[in-house]
Image (cartoon, rainbow, N blue to C red; front, top):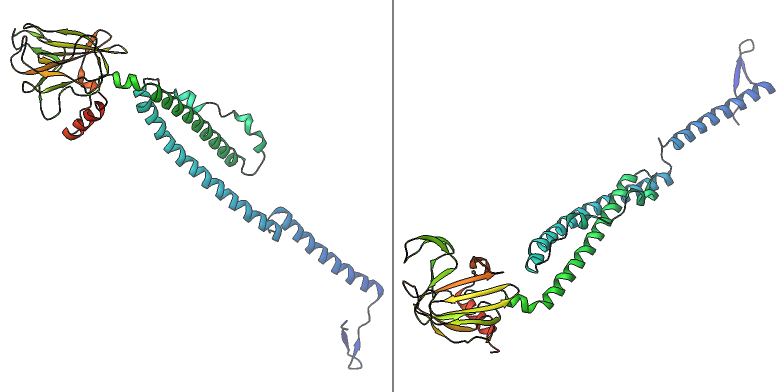
Length: 318
């Protein structure tokens, strides 16, 4: 311990300072109070979070990393949700339409992920809102994926068990593409013979006499008539499921009443019989006894080669 020396001005010498007991006590108390005050200040700073302890700093870093990961998960949830929305729209607007089943209501797709109380265990945390939002998004996605999976199960089941109905619905052009032109569409027109305005209940495919006529769907021949009036030589096929098709002005007929027909089978040839101003096939689609526009019931985006290949495949087992 260092000693202090004071100058004796009378004797001009330095003498060691001698402190009384009380003075020494004061010095000790001074150091204790100073040290205690400093310790208190440091403790307050750490406790209030103004200064982090090493352990606290480490925990803060982990927490920041977790928040970043949760935010990233939420972003990925949003991206998945956007893709799933596209799948849902395609399911409702295409797969379920061609399967003739109603779209799934929006309320059903969004329901079933629980209420607010489901997430009460996440309350009270510093980032409770973020955690609850992440849990909620995850639950919504799981629910939507489950419903979408069940929807596809239904569509697949119907597709596997409705092959006959799909092939029975009129679905192809009755004359080979590239070998005809549309001479008269479906709808109102001036009749070429009577000159009167009236509805044309089918489509006229102008083609050379002798060109093949194909059945547009599976079915049974229910009517075969030969005449020089009206429709001329004609064939009517019942496809079931409310559908019939009529083929008129034929030159040759290759089928008879009661014959079972498959899609793509040749049933006769183009002619000019009956009330006709030139060689053509008059083709009608009848659904539940009502004549409707055939345009909605055939594939019109196939090339000539693709059409012929399709007919070849469809009729390969005849």
